[in-house]
Image 1 (cartoon, rainbow, N blue to C red):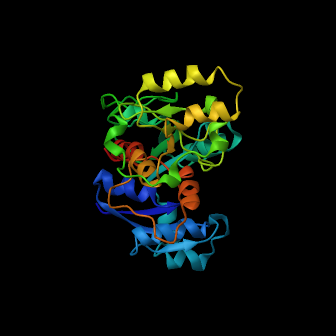
Image 2 (cartoon, one colour; image 1 turned 120 degrees about the vertical axis):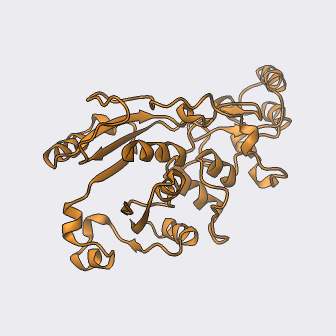
Length: 298
């Protein structure tokens, strides 16, 4: 069977990449997103996919006709995959969503999954729900509880060394304003098998927006921190100690790799670095979703 897929809140196409990675038989017949910058990136990578720049809540009958979808087909949707932020599982909207699935005779499974569980060295805990009308047995034990681990074993995460670029421009080095609060940084190394979730505020705020990288060793960083503690936080002497480490941000290409986008995926030249980070912060992990798609259609 060739599946016809409607991609809502398509962003930069993470779901599209996940479908391709799953190697399932089907095509994205239409993508919909209101973000014009994201849509430019989507179109750059998937020029043959019809794309509607609109809020899905305002789609008209004419819009749907342009998608090559009939209302009867929308009434007969057989498979759904939904991703949302952690915390959605406790929301009223989630309860409405699940009740609607039950009313429409969908069998569903909810998950809270992190990319580290599929061998990716990046934390990005997200809520997922897969649902289908097919009454055949699932390939795993379905439960009404939220599952936090996929049934397949993937092994531990690989090292960051596999995704690092060489000759990274100096513009990615942390400025002194960031180094003044270096004690808040999450520092990673080439042999690290972890990194923090990258948010849309990466490179703008020090704390909680994503990890930074250094070619220095953990021992060198530890010694630097010990030396810096002799000085007042934020002062010139404090900053000078951290300058030695040449701490830098992960590049957009490296973040793409950590989110498991294919190597062929590119941002248009006119997309600014700031826009790249914002778009990536709102995107999805391709590997996690491709594995969920395989489960959904098994």
